[in-house]
Image (tube, rainbow, N blue to C red; front, side, top):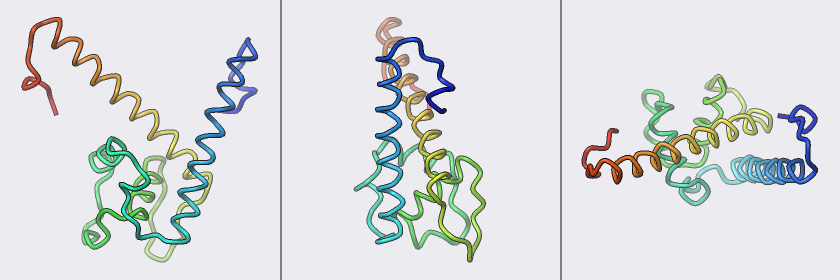
Length: 136
């Protein structure tokens, strides 16, 4: 979302939106450059455990690609595939715009997962259920 599309009525809201956009842009740039310089570091060094779990559940690995399990380049492809990036055998890695959109989508999904987990905990306490009843 562009700042002028947000139609925020207060300056402090606009400042917060721009701050979050700057953080997301820096993160996207760092991931893209790191993938170009050294694509094989472990993804847990850069992505959270929640993000790795979400990507593993939502974006299946292509058949025969277990060799690159756990690498940063594999997870960046998964982030790009969240927004429709077509993986080609000889194609280039995802660019900055695709990564920006993919990280935004991943952030939205992670926020939903955190909210769902929190609501589940509150419901379990209120109804007296245990954690063993939790789905998925």
